[in-house]
Length: 254
Image (tube, rainbow, N blue to C red; front, side):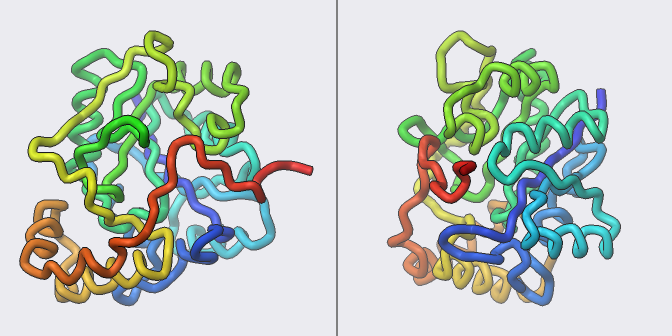
């Protein structure tokens, strides 16, 4: 069983263009994400899946310079991009991570993978998008599925949000697939640790500054930092998180 983590990345973010290559503590955000996902013991290979849009040549160039496997596919159909990347790198199990999560925790990835395998699920995640429930901070989002489940979604999903957000077809209808949700108690689902706006980027840069150059940390270390420095949460407290059915209007083909 080959487990491939596929990191979704593009330069044309609607709220913070070019965010995936923005500098955080001397390294592009994408570099932090790749480095942290590589630390997950259950992941055999990490691949960046970007698009064929001209702007995303910069992502390919960065990945190739760093020796990071990269796939370029559809800008419009992200589910197809993931599926084709999974086929190219011969995945049996696919882990989905987005490139705007520089605080992603390898331990949480492994926990989600363990739950996936132990439950015999088709899909496992440590979050389900609103209006459902999450108990881990936004920015630790990890989704896992079998290649067979991803292939079925690729063949059957027709709604725009299902194609853009990759895996909703696996969980947006009860009984379609076997789903395993990994929850945390207490509930920290209201905390926002992802990067989608300038305020989010400021928050993460401040976190890395407080880490004082350390690259070895867990999400619980970040939680402790935010509790010691309550002013951190105020930086991006007003940012609205996108929902599972939000569609980027620019991604609709002509």
